[in-house]
Image 1 (cartoon, rainbow, N blue to C red):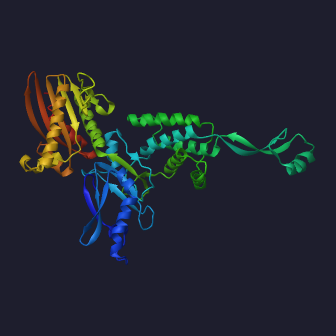
Image 2: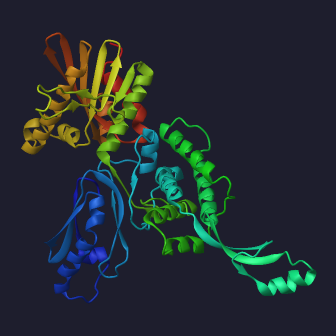
Image 3: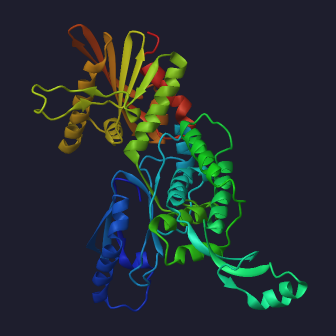
Length: 462
């Protein structure tokens, strides 16, 4: 299903009941049990579920929010993770991998603590999981307790348990009474686990490229991986066997940190990706689309600024925050303003707020008077918000823009007519403010087209 949508699914179809002989009276109970079993998993994706009826069939109504991702769903019949839910953007993209690569990996999905799903997303690089894997491995190294292991050795003095049969038959018989075979407890790190960690870190380093990159995220992960490798460099790397992984997960002395770390190692060894639509097993994940959309618009504006000059400040890095000072300080409400993006260039300031909403599509299809009052009220709030940001600009000419996503078909139609935005002028004392409403595509292959259209829309160079 897509984000911010509603989908009704019959219980029979969800569970693959088909024509199986089941009492109709049991279906509501089965459906209610399924909703209860998966409440926390659905919540991780911002999805709610409620029972309903449609054409004499019991249904479950799934209502999604602005979060995309994938989670496994537990069957009320088997108690196993036989099902899965994938939430995709309502504004089409060519896949999470290409979209995130084009955006420069400014934000990355969160990996959820659930079982893998049967399918994996296409074109997602292995290092995308590095932030989670390295974080878990780092925590595991910090929490890894030294423990007593049994060690066998030949010593000069008795220590622990003396192996008398070996002593008499092998050493004493050869005239070496000073050679005493012993078995004793020895306090040491878990050599096998450290060897496995070393192996996994080397795999992660390969997935990160092994050298510096243009992406700040990759460089940060690269530095963390090198730091962790230095802590296990004294142990030769060794790929753990499935039996070893299982033993570490089943150990009665394990902690949640160890469990998480071993799971992360398993992801690396078996090259797990994010759950999606290919034929590989994938990990459950989630990502708020409004956060990704902000990073996407940031990428577009930064590309434009690299051509036309100027500097771009980003709310994600807390560069656009302007405090609101109340008198006295303990009164009032809002404490600061923080537009998503500010582009400063010579005597012109451009302030952009990215909104992951349907408003642009609604405006291109309908007249303002034909829209619902709810949509109009939300759009008014967006305009009032971005106009408040106009006072942040220090130059005489200020452009404030609302950037909404649009579908590929809408973009292609509007771009051919050079009509990808609407402009209004506001004459204020000592300042000229332009208000722009723009629709932008969420497609990697349309990035250059979008940057060119933004160039004309913002009248750069005038």
